[in-house]
Image (cartoon, rainbow, N blue to C red; front, side, top):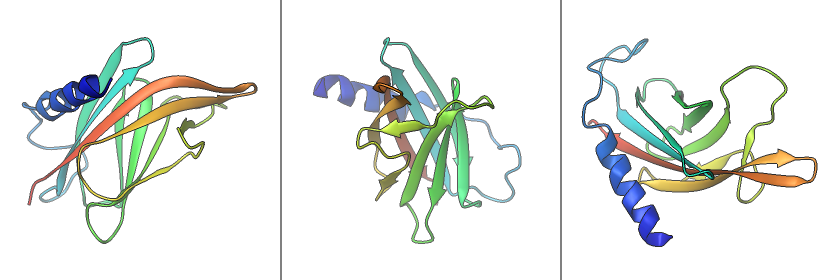
Length: 136
């Protein structure tokens, strides 16, 4: 499994070789290129890239999920939150520790296990791999 994680992180870093020259709503020079890869429990996957950095909150749509990064003033540290991208009463995705938000202390490639909270416990969604590429 560790080898699979290494391969997926490598693929994630290469996934955005061709990125859009400008992002909608982005003014000036962006600070980061964010790459996200969601490997679902059924072995299907979705991925996305986005420019981020001038707003404190950055959102990427990865398949049917919104991945939100909330940056701290200190730079590359951020809080990570994942939710279904459709409106409704669907619950937020939770992380392995049961919380609905994860703290990422640096911009290094990172992976997080995701679950749905259910009445009988939790149901595995998959693993989110995320990387920030500094553009400064």
